[in-house]
View (tube, rainbow over the protein chains, first blue to last red):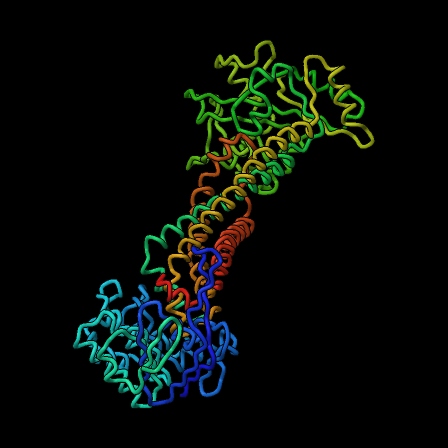
Length: 223
Length: 401
């Protein structure tokens, strides 16, 4: 699946600073083709997560279009866009993203019951094994460390073998060994045909990426 | 819908304290609505029953009835009382123009002494002229009420041998009519011969009930039916003018004074139900809004995984329905368990005619209470759900809420 961003921008309104409008993402074009892993690095607040959320269909751009194989995701109705995201986009957001009422296994298989499908527990257990938390399958998120929670999120994003993977600081809370495991998994996903966008501070990530971009003050440049 | 049910059950189970608090709140609301409604309906039923039991156009009692237990006390609350006038007054009442039927009644308060089985009110009637008690008794007892036969009110326990003795006069319990919700349920009925026998016996035993009235010629009240074409008001006025030392009161005046009291109690209960509903709605709204705000990140995660806005709204609504349905059923069931078995105590405390509605009416009240309680939960979920729609997931994730 090819992900194309055409001329996208986004601005925020800062209430605490009067009517000051802050341009988080300046006119940006980006194409991620199947089988490619693109890394975007940059300082905090440079606009990396804004870019990722716009690409994920979670934050409407002020202008421009985001297309998946030519289909404009923001031209879709919310229900259609949501289902499209469920089926085609694996998102690893920042922070702790486990639902507290579900076990680790139920959190990982969550995309399936959402649309009435049977949870693929065996495949989910394989992924948990790969990220090293299979023994925590029946634990609840409040029993996990930050790193374990990140790995839960990674396993969930990869469960459907999606055409596009958007990872926002996926190695943030991980030790070196697990950082490499996660980066390797993302690389393997790209090698199997997924279009992968990796937003990270991690220096090691460049080794796994096909192209590295740098974001600075809302402007995306090739490194 | 299946997913929202799946996740709602998980959420409610994982937050037992929060779930229990919301269920208790809704239960309290349902309890107030159903309990209050059953009480109001019972009062209305009681008034209707009292009106049909009273049945006469005019009630005539001796002047001293006020000091020796009023007719209201006897008929409404079943408080034993007695007052007598000479039976010659009955003849005078019958001679008044416009009086179609004048039927005497005899009230005898039994004693707790050894001569009586229990302390109750006995009401005697003249089978030849009575147009009030016999029609009511015939609803459940088709036989004749002979001498030494008793008809026992619904609130009175009947001994195993079916015999009751008052002033050493042993009688047989012939029937027990349905509940009326009035003091009549706590009284015993006998024909004129039987009660006269008891009155004579009481006099002989030294009970000083009759003062200067001869027990053989004592009458407690006279129930008057006015002939067609005559004004009840005029006939009552004529009785008061022509028959000395009696008080003729229009029955509708007695009923309307009770109806006034009942209206007041019903209005207070109605206002309380409304206030409780509004208060519970506000508390539920605040609680749901706070919970929804707390769960902003959770909803953002669901959006990331592919949930639509509609799914999130359905999730909140389903949780709300589960909570309010649980609370509504518990509250309504509790009110039935408390208000129905204790209806006797509630009725006597209110001092008004009180008759529980039929099973169908109680079921309708219960269904209405469940619906009203669930409506409060649903409305709050709609309001708090509409707040989620305003949140842009990307911003929530960016702010790390």
